[in-house]
Length: 80
Image (cartoon, rainbow, N blue to C red; front, top):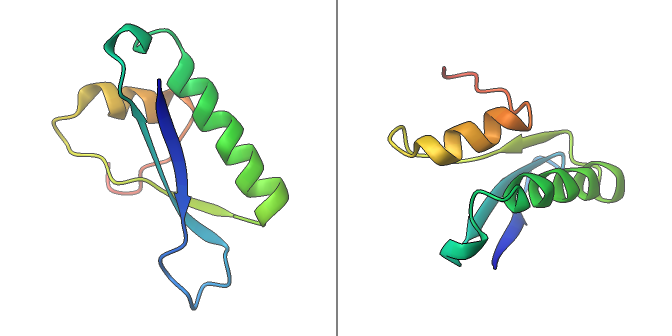
């Protein structure tokens, strides 16, 4: 259906901040809650297994579906 990933781009951060991304490629798999479940699972894994304290996501301002998805998992946007 798609993928969800964590990236550690700031090597001076000692793994406490990770960039998170998600893609649901198959159109028939969209709008079924799969992305929200996958984000929650990956964030739990990052938090409890990898010690991540902060997640960063790069979402375009015009990508309303992704913005709603991250808001739905209570993702805080300091730039909003």
